[in-house]
Image (cartoon, rainbow, N blue to C red; front, side, top):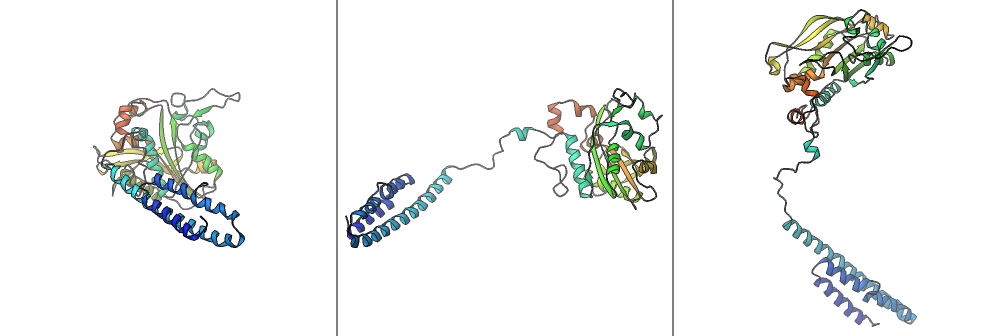
Length: 357
């Protein structure tokens, strides 16, 4: 077979075989039979070496034309068969998308209410321009008490209120921090104002009953600059409460109080009706303007800088928002309780999408 008429017959036969291929497997067999190493078209290419020079060029061009047309026909038929195979698969492999998703580890697991509230508060304060600061759970007596203007004779510095470690050789003692205020001290010592931080974390006190545990969670906030005043403090707290309890308006009151590290100081109460709780007023934390002595202890001039701070219990905020009656259940590791009060790991709180899902 060395003339073009024979090549024409070969091409016609191959194109018919391609059109007759009923599936991709049959088409692949045709391709191998035509273009494979021992295929009919490949064999014609191997004959070129035996031809006279004057015949070789013309015959080679004719064989290449056949090879190209066969290749194009194979690709076209392949696309047609693949589309037909996909249509058949879609018609036979149907799925009922209305069926519930199979439960797996992600669906079974739950985010603890404390972790959820921490994330909610972090999201709220991030929207207000605060950054998150952290510090160690084991603190020095100086950072936990002295630099916060807490006198030696204050009850919180006694063994019956605070977890102390054994004294060092020099008599100093480390302490499990009783609040996250040492984070504020570390920030003021290492950061030049303006400062705007929150400090969430674990704290420890010698106390245990229905509303108190030896370890609990607290969040504090600190703002330091040259012009901050009590009005800014009240606005931040009001905006935080509206966002956290997901209400349009909230009524608050500030009762005069005393804290060694703030002056003036106040207890923060929130109107129970505004958040759908029984009673008249609910206490949620303490606040005040940072005491000048605290600023001096951190190397800041109180004649130049001023600021406010406030703190609240994260566990108590979770109890108020989600109706959890007993604080001790937070640490009972009861899977039934966690399944009831916990949150899906896929429900990430956000200001735009909703905090509690």
